[in-house]
Image 1 (cartoon, rainbow over the protein chains, first blue to last red):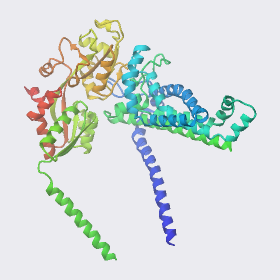
Image 2 (cartoon, one colour):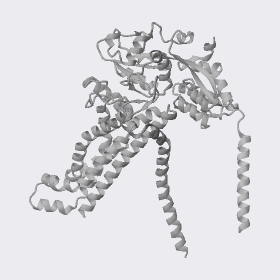
Image 3 (tube, one colour):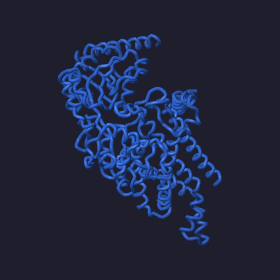
Image 4 (cartoon, helix red, strand yellow):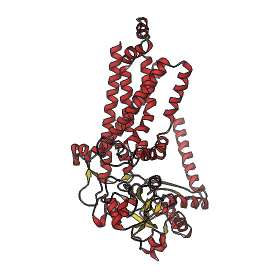
Length: 294
Length: 280
C-alpha cells in the first residue's frame, strides 16, 4: 500500500518534468506564432519568403519584408561550412574509430571536446579580427563574406560531425569487419566498402544535424557576414557579404517596433521550421538506418 | 493536528510580515534602487553616472544595460525598467501608445563620418556623403581619394544613430541607403570595422571617436563639440532619459545627479555635450 503510493508519486513527478519540457517548447512556439503570424497574414507567406527586398523602415514609400536573400544567406553559409567540415570530419572520425591507437584516440577525443567548449562569440571575434582582414587582403572583396562565415562555422560543426560519425562507425557490428578481413580485404578496403556503408545513416544524420546547427548559429555569422540583406552578386560569389536569418533577428530586434518587430518574429518562424525539418530528417535517417541493420 | 498546522501557518505569516516590515525600516533613506536600459549611445553616460552615484550613496543599486532606444522606450513603458534611455526623439506612434512617458534631455551628440586614418580623404561635402550612402559614388577617386572601391558601413534599421544620420543625410534627397552597406550593430563595431578596413567609410557618435579612425570634415565643418552645440555641424541629436509618468523619488534623485554639475561633467568626459550648452 505505502509502496504503491510512493511509486505513484514518483511516476507523477517524472511525468510532470517531462510535461514541463514539452510545454516549454510549446509555449515558445505559441509565442513565436502569436507575434509573427499577424505579419505573415498581412504580407503573405510568398511575399515574405520569396520577396527580394527587406526594408522595414523606408525613408519614403511602403515598408517591404522580403526575407528570401536571408534564407539563401542562411543556406549558403551552412552549405559552405559543410563543404569544409564534412570531408575533414568524416576522415577524422574514421581515424578515431578505426586507425588511431588508444592513446592518440584519447588525446584527440579530448581536444575535440575542448573545441565544443569554445564560446561561439570567441570564434566570431577571432573571425572578425583575423579572418575578415585576411580574406580582404588575400582574396579581395570587403572581407565580410560567406567564405569567412563558412570557415568559422566549419570549425564549430566539426566536433558535432566527428563525434556522431565516430559513434556510428563504432556501432557497426564487429562481425562485419571480421568477415571482410577474413575474406582477404585490406583494412582500407574494409573501411570503404563495409564500415562506411554500415555507418552511412549515422554519418548522414550527423551532417544534417550539423547543418541545422550552422543555420541556427547566430553570434559568429553576426560578426563576420557583414549583415547585408541582399543576394550575393553574382549569385555564386562567396566573397560577398550576406545576412542569414539569425543575424537579421538579432541585429534589428533591439530597435524594432510594430510591424518591423513582427517581421523579425516571422523570420524566427521560418528559421524554426527550417531547423525543425532538418532535425526531423536526421532522426528519420538515423532510425531507418538502425531498423535496416537489425 | 489540524490546529498545529493552522498555528504554524499563522506563525510563518507573522514572521514574514515582520521581516518585510523591518526591511523597510532598515533601508537607508538615500539608498536608491533603479533599473536603467536602452540606447547603447547613452550607455556610457548611464554607466559612469551610476558608478559615481552608487559610490556617493552607499547601499544604492543601479543596473544599467543596453538594448537600443526602442527597447529602452518599450521597457520603461512596460515597467520592466525605471528609466529608459533613447538616442532619438520619440516617434509619434510611440507617443500615441505610451502617452504617459516623460522625456528628460540629458545630453547632446553629433554624428561624425569616419574613415580609416590612412585614407587621404579628410573632408567631404554633404552631397558626396549622400552619393556614397545612396550608392551612386562607389570609388574613392570620385571624391579625391585613391582608386579603390568604397566599402560602406552602416548601422542597422531602427538604430538611433542611423536614424539621426538618415534624417540629416538621406531624407533631404529622399533616397534609400544603399543595400550594399555592411551592417554592424553598435558604434564600437562600426569603429572597429573602419579601423580594420582601409577603404571603408562609416558614421559613429562623436563620443566614440578615437585615434583608430579619422573623422571627416562635413561641408568644411569639423565634428567637434563646439560645432555641434553652435548648430554649425548639421548631423546632431539630443539624448534622452525617459520615465513612465513624473519621476518618483529614486528616479528624480538619479536624474538630478545626471543633470547636475557632476553628471554633466561625466557627459563631457565620455565625449558628449552637456545639455546646458544646448540652452545657452
